[in-house]
Image (tube, rainbow over all chains, first blue to last red; front, side, top):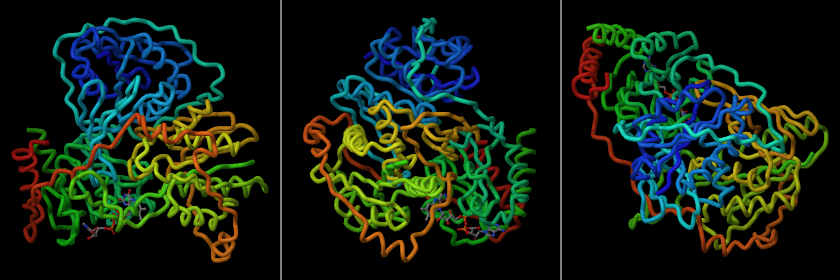
Length: 324
Length: 263
Ligand SMILES: Cc1cc2nc3c(=O)[nH]c(=O)nc-3n(C[C@H](O)[C@H](O)[C@H](O)COP(=O)(O)OP(=O)(O)OC[C@H]3O[C@@H](n4cnc5c(N)ncnc54)[C@H](O)[C@@H]3O)c2cc1C
């Protein structure tokens, strides 16, 4: 089966989970000749060498000024060209902002099928079968593409293994794709975020604070803990709505769905909406003064204590452990 | 300026989602429905644009069953001018591309300057339909928008992406814009608003009225739901209490290293 993997990049760097998507592609393709990757941007050819060994013989590179910053119409044209060049029947990407913006557009363009944010995916004949969390993870749905000339699937970050099996030499094939002139949209700029940390949706470790933080200032102790264990800091909606945390830090049904190896919830009660966004975390630690708080029902480890006492001790103990 | 807002009815975020005994579907009988939370930001933005312009029309539309009329009326009570229900009678479970094709045809017939949607629906969490409509109409789109400024026939939209980065786009109308939470604060319907809403026009149309062969879409879906499973149960955790905080933290840190192996 001819499979193409869209490798998301920003500023010349591919996303940390890109190799996970490529490994899914390798499994679906079955051999290195049938798997190709596509990288779109400006000055991005170097990314191809980082894909060596992950199962793709070909890396299509669309590298022009017009693709320097993400533009949905231009990038769709670039990926469309790669789909056609490879004769791809399946296109794999990461369930991250760029892919989630592009794939619905491309699925409509090819009159194709699309599965989004899957946590499992395999071939069933010519169709793709996947498992996808719905209702913010309250249930898992079995989804399947049908009647689709081209099928698109985005995989949840931090869920599939990136496997370098040593095959697939990732040879660059340049594609010269003129960006559409009638797209009626241009990218003015991309403003940097305040944080150098991985985004919540990709972070392997998250420390989150709730209403109990009491102020924006108090988030300092979470930042200090996060520094020690290289975590990204999140928040409950109550903390965001109270102005203690910025809204892009919100975890939950109307915030971000996160999937870290470790989620430390501090002063968060565990509302159904909050848990919807973080229940798939592999390990959950809760710190809460109320032994009846619902968060303890999903916690792997819990401490009934004042977070202002516990959090600094966590930072200190982790530091001691990691320095060993 | 004519603005079309597309809303979806979704289960209340408090809802427990029950899977039918045979695993084939979600039990809907006991569910309470709300306007998809992100769609409320879309409605609010449409109303703000109209108020700022001093004129215009805000149409609140949904592809849904009759029950969604109540939610469209809620949008009218917030300040929408007219409602449009595109009936999904007999089309339950239609895939997102099928829905997008029907709604794109409805948008074409309505011919608005701007389509506002929520960035995603909180039931299937797909983020498909708004973007697909834009593609089908060959319109530009920006999704996950936290700030929107209109200048005549163009708009500047800020889109939130990973790591707090913001992409800023300039686009020509007509276009599809998908609302993110930070875009605005949705108003509550006022009592007079609620009274007036009942008298505002609310048409019901079928996909066929827009020239779409919905039966054909239903017969050859591009994606199907094959059934549902509960998420895996987490084994009961270890909760420590009543001891010295440092002692409890020490235990958890050790467990994270030795048992969970995540640190
Ligand atoms: C449509 C809708 C969407 C929503 N979406 C989201 C969402 O995406 N994300 C989200 O998080 N919420 C969401 N909510 C809100 C949700 O219902 C809760 O209100 C919110 O999650 C509560 O946040 P919290 O746990 O921080 O606050 P609270 O529920 O007030 O909990 C605070 C907790 O802190 C504990 N505590 C107090 N002092 C201390 C201390 N010193 N040390 C330790 N613990 C302490 C308390 O025991 C309590 O358990 C949504 C609600 C609605 C209606």
